[in-house]
Amino acid sequence: MKSSNNNNNSSYQVHTTSRLAQWRIHNLSSCTFRRSDPFPLGLWNWHLALEKNKVLMLKLYPEISNFTRDNPPIASFVIRVLSFDSQRNPLVHPQITDQLLKTNDDFVWPIHVPLTGKLIIDVEFLDLKTRSPQGGEPCSIWAEGSSSINSAALTSLSRMLMDGIYTDITINTSNGCVGAHRAVLAARSPVFQTMFSHNLQEKELSTINISDITLDSCQALLHYLYGCILHHQFLHHRLSLLRAADKYDIPDLKEACHASLLQDIDANNVLERLQYAALYQLPELKANCIRYLIQFGKIFDLHHDFNHFLQCADRELIAEIFQEILAAWKGF
Image 1 (spheres, rainbow, N blue to C red):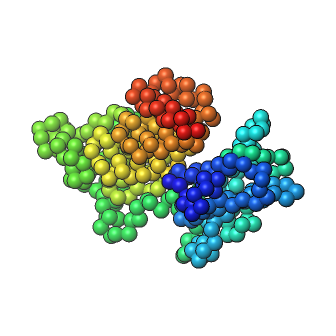
Image 2: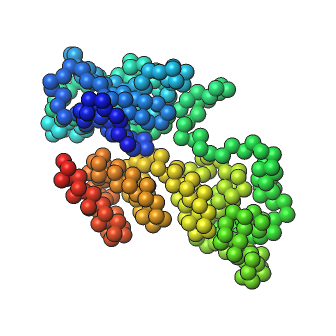
Image 3: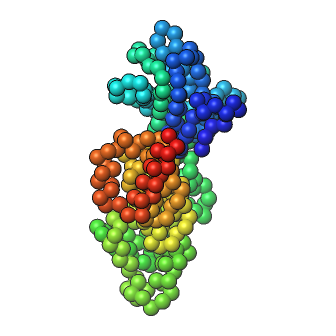
């Protein structure tokens, strides 16, 4: 998505994807002050600003509003500046961790090296938190999607799993076994329902052999199906859960994994997620990964990893990436 620009001047636009914002400035030398258009990321609209006095000052801050005053972001991020008129490596600010940002003076980075001409300012948000209305520790806005187990019925259902109450099926994983309930599995997955409805060995022996999943990942799958998965458990096992969701036809789990994987694409996981997106037919995740690599220029930071990726990735996926590269060069 792009920030709006009433003046139709691309020098003020900030491009964003999931947790990354990138501001491209075509010519800085003629200005003493420049502020970006507002750009949405998380719950807030943001601004980047540059001010030239004795040194160049770079600022990042949320747009002032009643919402920001009542719910200021607590941000963790890495910010980089790349100058096209310089041979030096990108300037990288030390990582900011859990800093409260309310005004345009809460994050100011004085840059003591001369920068002119074309710049790219790159902000990667690692986390965004808000204070809980009930007090206590700040909560990540990207953890709010996890299920809240408030219903007595759901609590009882999770107890059936946790305490092994009248389990009637055993799941054998690659490194252990766990008990479950046929009715719950069949209600959540048509594949399991078929297993238990026909004269298959799962029905006769009261066991399911799932050799391609670990015990921990299987427990995470069951916790999701029973409505008692914790957010950190979901995040840790997302890729295994995505495989299971595809294999056992659990569309809500597949969509939950898809939505979660879209939120924190970065240089460490983008190539792996791109392959998962192609394998499990997740077009939005694939498009966002390709956009992160090509439009945001991150492919140049992953030279060694990308060469390895080319050796093992699907040929159609590689062709699609190179088509995007060619299109980007034509538009440059």
